[in-house]
Image (cartoon, rainbow, N blue to C red; front, top):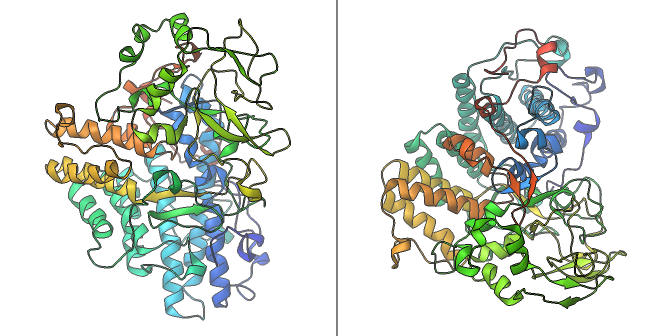
Length: 578
């Protein structure tokens, strides 16, 4: 069984849906006399957990959290949170995330409670219990990062008896963290190092080590984090089989069952033609040349992200070195440097005006290769589709509307659904129609990492540096840089020299942005580093024109408890400032 998220008997019988207070299907629809009896039932129970985990408002929209950071700008699904000005206890994203995380918790509890007494092998009981405890820990870890302390429910909470009376008060953050560590420690003991090929995608012992290390890292327990990360990076007790994928670009284009040994725990979206088998990445990250996309959502790479990437030699990039006066923010000057004219039919460039397109392209392609692998930059090409979904070459031009036509996605050029002069995503975006394997724009058939080795290596580097071993941190970061051909830190020129712990910390922060953009990690990083406030700035386009405003208040560091949950559970208390 590959974890394709087939909604099996457990889900069909409806564990539960909705929120912490839960709309619950009566227990007589899933009787212990008809279920919880066989090895196949245990397998189906596990599948139901993964189905809940990959739901949009649980972890299925993980990539969209970048719009809450300085790496991306967007309109949905977290616009209230990302813009700050309408962030409240009534925010839809806040409420939905709470509900779906608790659904995963309660499904996990149901499995843990029932599988323990099944007349099946102890090995199967242990493995399914380990999976459920990992996923429960994963849900509570996210809740801890969003809200701090939350109500804690374990397998002793029987929804058949208590679904109408879930009124536990909030446990402290320390208590929740303790429960998370305990679950992951037990998961490490019970889970296998790997599964058979037919079960690819199920949680492993290495994933539990990685997540526990991350919990320790977020709590600044550096030595504990180092021990867990070293376990899987250096195969301390087992041969976990993880390795960096040799091709950074290919890593994010794995479909049709292809899998990378870099993926420690991932959502395997393996079918782009069938509902329920793939994530809706293109529906948020795609451009208007992507598979007939009629975008109602829009998330784009930020100018902050693009400007962060280093030159190929590792030196800092500066727009003024390319176009004098560019950093002044004069939009008319930038338009002069970067805009061309196209015909009214949107089929060809008719006049370069004052734009040297080669110079513009070099400003992007003579930098860290991850820039052009992650972002569609001006005057580069993208294999999109025409109005009939046939593969068609498209170019991203910055067209001067006063000198010709406007870009049209059905023709030769790419345009933005919001009318912004923004960059576009290349990472995660399929090209053409993948030889027919990809048929629906809202079903992106790529394996999406929730934990991958590249992330773990950078977290290990951070823990080493914070524990005072900067030389080891440099060695880990250089593994990541070497994959894409970037020069190593401390490898020669002055700009590559690491001057101390604080300098290294900043370099790790930047490297995480370069490497992990589009994977939803940055927002949580900024908050744990205490850098969320200084990262908040208005969203501006390539020319420096305002797209929308952002605001920050101290209370944004923790999300508000959803108002509807406080109305349902009178024992809940609100976070400070809300």
